[in-house]
Image 1 (spheres, rainbow, N blue to C red):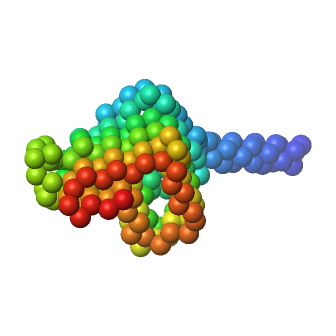
Image 2 (cartoon, helix red, strand yellow):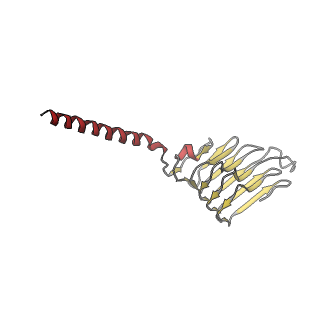
Length: 194
């Protein structure tokens, strides 16, 4: 009889250990990414790792929805997250606005599809003085890591950026993939580049 009790106690401990390991896995699940859709206007910037998690996932901005921010990047891609943007990304930062910032502090595997609009209004009074300097960029890839994936601006997509020294798309990171531009890129200002 005593050996049977020992075996039962041992089994009970094993089951407790199993439940404990399962609960640890469940509690870690918020780190796993899930695809997400933005279906309502939003006036706060977001970074994809905080919004989606750490695993590969897709963030979709649906048509007729706007995400905007008063300063800095509107959307920061800082994980293995792809974007599908049919709505509008708008920065109200007059001189340092970024629509989409791909932060390649580490290597990023992603695809970015722009079917909607990226708008950076630039400085007030800009129409009177086309030389007002800015660092505005519609899409900026920057950091020491490599971006691997494709950037597509479809025929319905557009990037509009105002400000001297501004850029429609600026790639300052190693880039492995394709950049396909069928839509429009409009930049206004001295020394501005598409």
